[in-house]
Image (cartoon, rainbow, N blue to C red; front, side, top):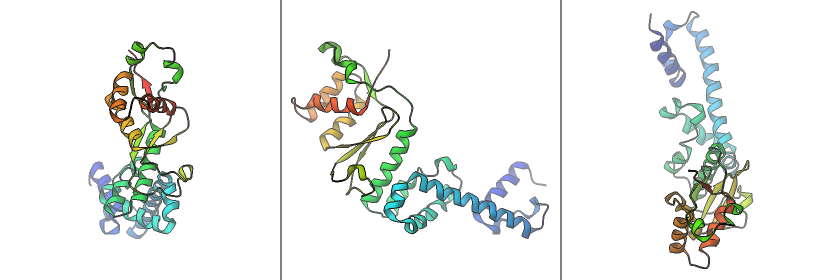
Length: 242
């Protein structure tokens, strides 16, 4: 009799690769009855994988249409490394799969935005800096104010035209998109090239003075602080305690 670990491995292989890998010595019932149960179970798992993708990328689903999205999803989930993937993380590689499959920039951007939205939604809680936290600070204290990027922030450089499924960005032509969740709601913030470059410098900055130096290098003195204020209003910065 095979060991428990061996039996589990053979059972999983049958579910993933089909009846030709049927472990006949593992079941009390005859092969036909056992296969019937295994098929029902495999169909349930397969359906759950496809639903997980639809739930992760609802706008891409709408953008592409059900039949095209479903066919692409089935091709994706039938890859060997996806068959062994935890269903909670099954959607993580879908953006790369779209790229490898030769899809256009609009579809790839939309998928990246939707996955970033999910990452932002699931990210750790943190209190963002508010303008009232720095409004009364003297210049020296303001420049020394310790900062870091908020854990919910995601930055996306856009490559193509925005999908019409991004209705909240209709009639906009941003170069990049910042996704933030300062409170309960995940929000999109369209960005220019300069705004994107400054936002990317947050992770390299330890104080407000550091970030201001980067902003001055990337823009001009008249607008540098305005860019930082916009980031604060979006909830992109948090204070480092201690």
